[in-house]
Image (cartoon, rainbow, N blue to C red; front, side, top):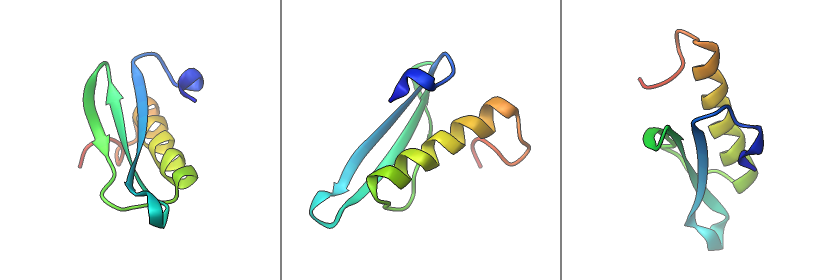
Length: 67
């Protein structure tokens, strides 16, 4: 899953309530927590949201990254 990520980034999708299908996500940048979810999502959507956060950071969007 992480093979397509830019160097230094890692995405972690973890269960919040697996019986309900709720997952959270974290993005690590060079080993340090960079951003994390504040809502529960299905696993696929959690990964997609984390990937979007990485893409915003690598593009340098004004709205990307930490808020």
